[in-house]
Length: 528
Image (cartoon, rainbow, N blue to C red):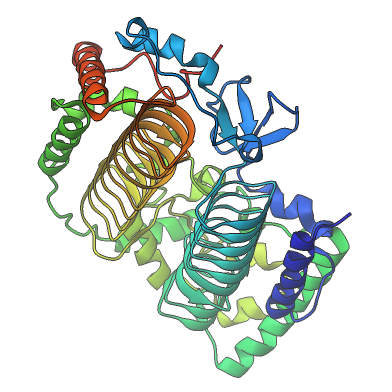
């Protein structure tokens, strides 16, 4: 039986598809496989209490000691640990094991009407989705913020009335767009910036009424759009799915003559100087705050900091032969390897390449792939806004001083991260929003001065904690709200807490200085 939440979302799905395709295509449930098919799947575990399915974003959680958020008793009291139990990290980890339950199906803050979802922050009407922040009416989505009425999409923000968008920001009434910004009423395109009414375009800026990068009179564009959109709707209703833009382009190599011509014309712009010094300074400052003693040499800790961060691979530009970073983000690993180009190269190609008028004769949705091969080049990255000193980092929006990180949004002084939104001095973190001075933290928001914390909100000075809200001063604690000076879920005096914390931080910094890693993480504390 369908829930009220699903019915509400289904109505908005139907309205969104009517906006996009000019007609309703049926219930959202009919298209579930298509809407989920390209998204990053959530990780499921079984509750240790009820056996029901519990969703997580990361794969790092153990198979046992699992709870759903609705199974937590936040009023449960715990006795303080003995002196011997808190003498070192190994002892305290063993002592708190029976109190350590990893909680999934997380929704934090003022979130309501959530089903089959986790890592949801201040959002409403969310269905079968992960990492949803400050949004409403989201289904089959992953890694998004500030959005409304978006279905089957991943890695986006500030968007509305869209389906199958990926790695996009500020999208309105759009479908099957990749790595785009500030666009509306557009379809099946890659790297559009400030465009509207565009279809099957690549690496284009400030354009309207364009098909295959060819700008058309509005009346001609609208007539051809109507035909193409009608064909999309018919195929979608028939097959309950549509091919992706990557499927449409295929894995064929571009025309060698076009590549040779573009090589002859392209002139690489001079790159601004970069420095790792401010990033190193921030790393030392952050570790000094966290451990009471700064650690030096951020690169020496790179392997450890990257332990729970997404994989990256190497790619090569078909135009220049230069190497590039390809991250496990959005659809990047699916991009045609024979059609990869660099950031500046993609902008150059977008300005140089377009379909000819005769390419539009007889153009239909089923034959468009053969026509757009001459312009289809993919850059697995995104740069936008005020940027400076971003080194070996991709997906930067208004970012400063980032190093070997992916998806740096309105952030500064960060290294070895995946997805930081409005963050400062963040190191080794995965999916952090509105936070500062963190190391090795995950799926959390509004955090300060924390280390090895997961799925938490509005906490400060926390270490080895999971599923905590509004907790100030905590170590080795799970499923706590509105607490202060706690260790192993038990409260201590301010003085006693500070003494234990000081000793444990000294042990951690000593081990880190010696081995450039730490044996324990938040994901091992409760592991059997």
